[in-house]
Length: 199
Image (tube, rainbow, N blue to C red; front, side, top):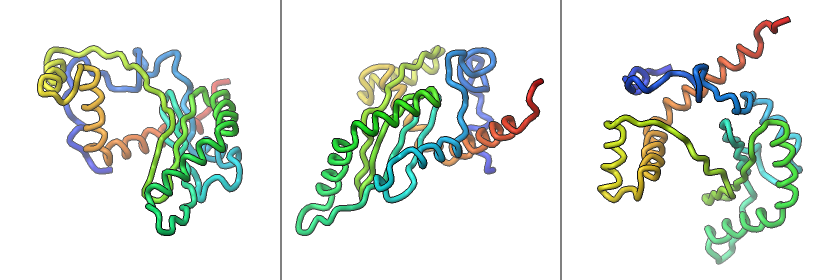
């Protein structure tokens, strides 16, 4: 695994390594971790045949599972290809709404997470309704000044919007490192699951 410049960065006294809220990392109300392969297998078996041209893309966090499927491209003829792709996605969204909601309800009961949907068709990709979760945090003055600078410069309208902007920027610029970190965390979960069970 390649080192990344954020890996050993000093985030200040307020930063606690670990996962989530509380002394142990994960909050008491958070759903239990899930094994990605198990979730992928469940959706592969649960989704109707013919919906998508390949296995779905899954994006999983503590609150939500986003399912993005690839649709067959329509023959646009002389029409605009992007408009045809958008129309195919819109038709899929409307025609499958009831079935998708049934799958989402079953998945939420099984995994303790909401389910959001999306579809890709050619170069067009659309996410349907997804959660917008409030995240509480405490920031010291240097961090607040960063947010206030973004607000004062007109990049964001509020501190909360500036925080979203900053998180997205880090996500784009540290995508490879974050992917490696998620993979390492998944390996730890797998080893933990194979460990001896308390009798």
